[in-house]
Image (cartoon, rainbow, N blue to C red):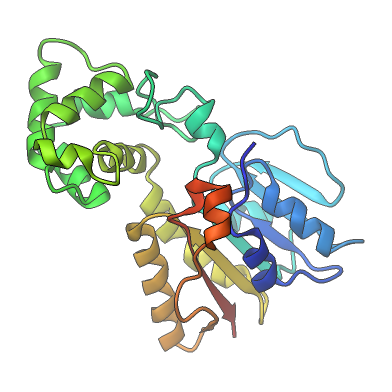
Length: 284
């Protein structure tokens, strides 16, 4: 089961009160939403949005199958007003890595899929086998910040001319052969950045975040709060810069001068939380 990250801190900053309404833009298994529903009873509501359909049934919970980049349309369609707080948890669930069989993890042998929305058309396999070497270098450098982007992209293109690259173990081996020996023993696995870059490209994750943040701010009622949990530097940079720009315009108050990170105890309990960064603003 997915463990909701920074749950104590999310509740502290959203501060749900009786009768207040909240939007969970990345519902997942509902850990954050259920915790909010315990605080805003008896008549407060949560609107949960997720790529995957959920069978969870709970009083005062409205579930929508969709993309949070369409936040404004979803809120309007469900006439979900007023909104006291919005949560964006940009991390993948443990289910995606361990159970989905979509190639998010490089540890086993799974199809190169990496779609968060199983109905989307673009897959990791298409990117790896059909995108040009220049395009691969671009996403590896831009989305993965990988120092050996050029050699890895070149090796992928060379390998795919003789045999289609169809699973994660094939891709992992190509990456391994494309980098210096010492790089294979770093604290972070040598395949991490490339897998991250491909997943971001498949799901257009950064553009979706850029589209969503202004919508979230506009939908909040005055004094409403936006909580964003990011998991890598590119996401955190987008959030940080958006908050700074809107602060300069006098549209919000930044409540976290520095990002909140998980405690040592939480990281021991949930190692996948270690890279989480939480930032919060209050609408003026």
